[in-house]
Image 1 (cartoon, rainbow, N blue to C red):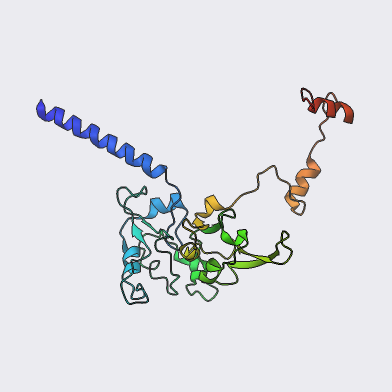
Image 2 (tube, helix red, strand yellow; image 1 turned 60 degrees about the vertical axis):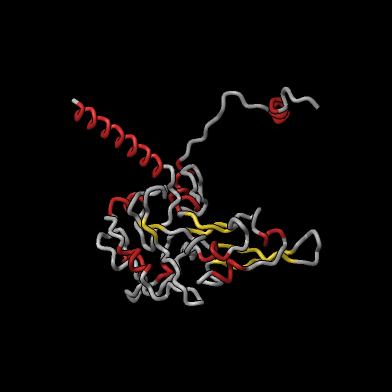
Length: 263
């Protein structure tokens, strides 16, 4: 009897712990994966949590600081408390960004296809790290000091695809009429999401940060009509005109909208 109760208690405890862990993982979708990772749901199904990608990254000789001391590798393997599925690789740009290795050692070692090497091949069938789409850098204008009028190009200079993924836009300061804003502009079609810009940002909390593309890019709704799109033009052509039962004059409409407003 005691053994049975003990077993039931352990089972219940295990269920509670797993339930809490599952909720923890689901609550943290903003995770950055290695280059060429499949879309998140597909990645989680394919990743066998072997750690070979992180090992290939950590053991690089290039993972050294300028003074020769060892630098932690970019990729970490999630453990309990990381708010990510245990055993899956991820990186935190503010701590250690992706340093854009030319031979991309973390990708070819993946045995399960969770990292899609084909997505990084160029026209010559050679690996090209510039094709990676790990995420997208986003600039928070209110906290970026460049938008305050203070000259700063730290993110621009840190970008490995300088002058393409991030460009500097000159904008006249209308308040003074003499000075110019030098504003960082991220180009989503070029940015790889490496996070070197986030690491270099001079503010206490980075004013430029990398998010998974799913959360950093918008998408037009199905109701939006693009005038140059053939399918949308057909939609407009086939649309039926709808008349309301009661049409108001301009004055009536104005009176209706201002109903109850006191001046």
